[in-house]
Image (cartoon, rainbow, N blue to C red; front, top):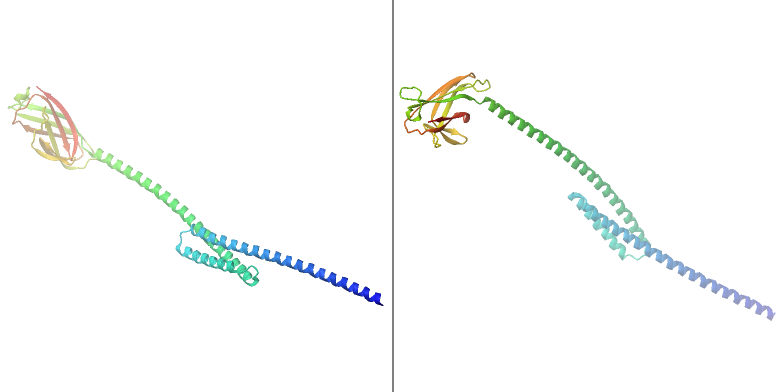
Amino acid sequence: MKKALIAASAILMIGLAALVVYLLMDNRQLEQERIEMQELAELDKQEMENDYERLSLQYSEMMTQINNDSIIAQLTQEQMRTQQLLQELKQVKANDAREITRLKKELATVREVLRSYIRQVDSLNQVNQNLIAENDRVNRELEQSNRANEGLKQERQNLTEKVAIAAQLDATGISMTLLNKRQKAAKKIKDAKTIQVNFTIARNVTAENGNRTLYVRIQTPAGQTLTAGTFAYENRQLEYSMKKVVEYAGEEVSVQTFWTVGEYLEAGQYRVSIFDEGNMIGTKTFNFE
C-alpha cells in the first residue's frame, strides 16, 4: 500500500513538472508572439507615417505645376489636413488599434482626395496645352495674315508709285536759244538780250488733265540761278527763272518761255531744268561762247 502511494505521488510530481514546463513554454511563445505583433504594429505605423509624408509632398509638387489660385488654396488646405493627421499618427501608440484603424481610414480618404485633384490638375493642364496650341495656331495665322497684308501694302505702294511715275509729265526737245536786240539768234553770249527756252510736254493719257504750272530753271556756269521767284520742291523752296501755265489734256503740248537779260552773262555751260508739281520732268545743258 505504501509503495502504491509513493508511486502515485511520483506520477503526480512528474505531471506537475510537465505542466509547469508546458506553461513556461506557452508563456514564452505568447511573449514572442506579442513582441512580434508589437514589431509589426510599429512597422505598420511607420509605413503609415511615410505614406502621409509622401502625400504631403505630392501636394507641394502639384502646387508648383498649376497657376490657379482657387485650386492652390484647396490643395494647401488638404496638405495642412494631411500634415495634421500625420502629427496625430506620430502621437499614437502602435498598439492603439482603434486609433490606428481610424488613421488608416483617413489615409485612404486623403489618398483618394489627392487622386481626384491629380485628375483635375491633369485635365486643366490638358486644357491649357490645348489653349496654348490654339493660341500658337492663331498667332501663326495672324502672323501669316500680317505678312500677307504687308505684302499687299507693299504691292499697293509699288503700284501707286508706278502709277504716280507713269502720271508724271515728260519734257522733251528742250532747247535754249540766245536772241539779240532784234530778236534774232545771237552767236555770242555777250550779244544776248533775251533767252528763249522751248520744250514739248509729251503725250500722257495717265496724267491728270487741267491747268499745269511749269517752272523753268536756268543755272549759269558759276552755279547761280537766273531768278524770278521760288517754288516748292522736296520740302524746300527752289528758285526758278520762268514759269508758264498750260492747259493739259493728255496730248502733246509745245511750250515757249522767255528770260529778259538784265545782267552780265558769262560764257560757259548753262543748265536748263523743268519742273511740274514738285517733280523735275526734264533737264539739258548748253554751251555758249
